[in-house]
Image: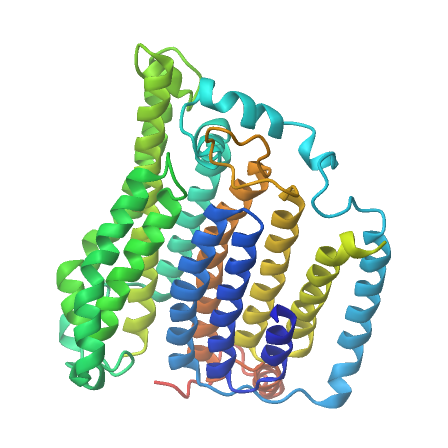
Length: 318
Length: 131
């Protein structure tokens, strides 16, 4: 089914429908992640792929136009041969790969057993994904948050949110259809009902990430999608009253600094950078505080970046 | 014999489809969609390698001994969020290209560039049809 969806995307020339199929594709792949036991990943993919990224694509398409020109048959041949060739080589190579689901594949031999066996004693949270993400591989995650932040700076420089003078602003943002969407009673009522629980759910995901699936990344995306939903239904202008873009632009940096600050504090306390065990007298408590704070930093950065990017795109299309 | 390899084959098919879209389509947005498909294929590859038959999600609980490998989950989780951020960056570039050329189609952009080059007027800004 996933494969079928991909083929449909290839054939579609209307970008609008292709983007919709992308959302469907993401939802399907998140179901696959769920089946493969990756609950955290499924969570993220559902929030990101089916929600936020679809909206980004739609916002971009609203600016650049909806149709792509069909691929000419003579332009198809070289890519097709290349892809089939590469695919054949990869399938040939796959015969040497470990079989699906077996216990003693190389991937399960190195650090994974340590994470699974010792993380409860060394770090604490029952969700091993959170322990690895925030504690064992804190550096990695710090880098990832940095990448998200850098991407945000790129979008900000290219499109610039909140830099528009108020005199230039047109009263009705046509992109998100303020006029049409607000009058649709069902949409408005349902979103009124949904937005507040979405935001609360985001906070729950944020603070409960140690115990169940969740954490800063998912919470940030879910929070951002709540705000974006509000902006879609009621228009950009009211949403920007709630979240003034100028102030919002500081938040990605605040989140990142919060993360880095935990690392620096742990250095001053005599540990290594991002070693949370020294943050409190009991190493386990220290780990717990450290994880909570850096997850908060991640959540703030991700949410602020997503909302900022959305505002940038929608302001462009005014 | 080959049943244990099915996951890799699905990944390869999706990956090659994404690559094909990137290479064949001249529309920049469609190319970004292709990159996203490719990316998702990589995600599925990692996650499917981390799965252990009979294992459960890596959240420690009483009475469960087999967990799937948490490491790929961590890597992919962050990769998804980074992926959407970079996608947004790509889309932003496409929007700027559209503002400069009035098109996001590679062939049309190349044509505009060639026309500019033929006129041999240096420092002439590209035709702006949007504003």
